[in-house]
Length: 98
Image (spheres, helix red, strand yellow):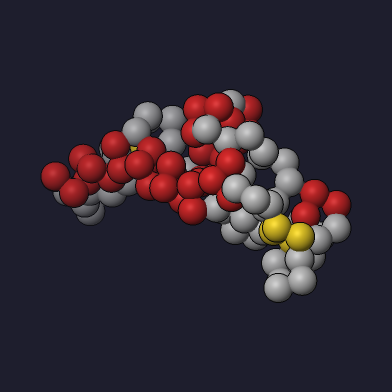
């Protein structure tokens, strides 16, 4: 196993970083979900009758369980060729090129 190449991404570190510095990804809302119900739109899942934000690209969370498309895109780019705080021991790009 000494020659095995791997990379581990930390979704927790990424989301924590975005909550602390939402402007890095262009987010304006990182506490409440774009779609859902109840407190912070996070007590009920997203249904056709749920309240929904007008611009999901400004939100970190789509509903009580899922990130928005903008969050997923940011995560993919960060894990692929981003900062070492989100992936270790190498980025996904370095893993592909190894």
